[in-house]
Length: 190
Image (cartoon, rainbow, N blue to C red; front, side, top):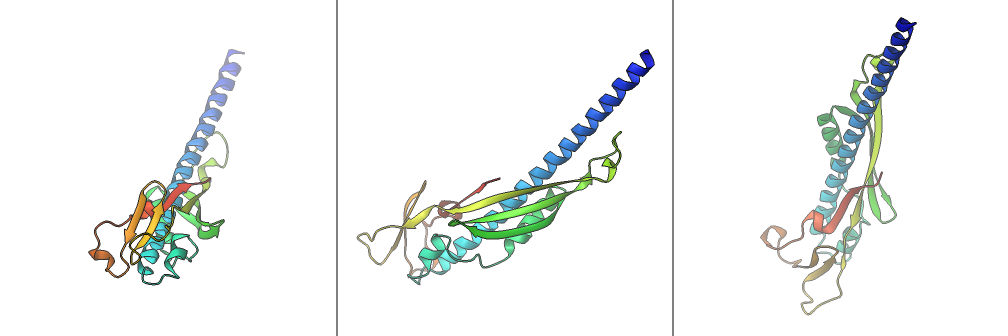
């Protein structure tokens, strides 16, 4: 009787260990998906910022860039997501960027390179964890009402105040410009 009870307890212990292994693999996968999604969104934010600064000479275009109404021009977000997923020992199954309700969302699905591992539960030695995450890029700024200096572009940004930008002076010659984090917020949504 004692041997049967000890064997049963050992089996339960190994089963709990298998569930702990699966949970650890899932958490690792979710961390990789979160990081990849944020990397994609940050790259998208940088591209939106570049588009905004490049369009400053056109008064019809820059407000659209600032309001996230223009399409992200490049596919650098894909490479950024794949790079960060790889750094976290995972592979990207899919990555996408889409406009949703006045913001851009980067969605990433990953599969871990490592498996759950050997356990008393059959099949875990070849099971990989899968996870997905979505990050959003939201605009933080709006065009400010025309001030005293009509030749400057003025924008009001939540959290960083009002910025004045001279559209006639090259961007690399201006000292006090907003950074991407001042123009657009990036955060996980799920």
